[in-house]
Length: 190
Image (tube, rainbow, N blue to C red; front, side):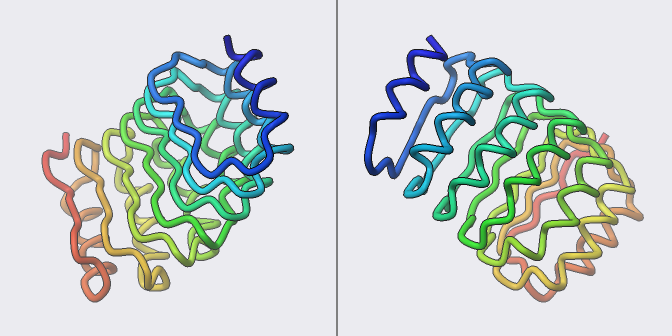
């Protein structure tokens, strides 16, 4: 199925939205899709891969493929299995200045994944919504995000609920975001 979807994408001219949520693509499907994005990703604005069991290898492959999506505004990777290694690979492709929504709810990027994201965060100058809920993030990850928040002038919504952030980390994030964010959800920390 994965190879068939990827090969059918290669002949398309202008592809603006690709919604493949809950298709259980896995790492192999993500790798095939990443290859296809090199040919058809130039005009892609929305990529929805929610609930596809994409893990580390798929995250790394998508990082390569996303480098060919300069117009991407929305990336939904909620409810996958992207861990630290996958996130580090993924951020290589997250350098587009058009990305407005990055949804990573329900993965396991942890503190090191947040650090990797923080390194490219300011290049995401159009980012309005960042969902990092349920990602095994602790204080170290929260602090790395807090350090770059003052420069994230477009960011209006940050979701960090259901992580492992203590009062110290939460305070750092809320203070850093006080002037720019309209919605910050840090409820129910473990």
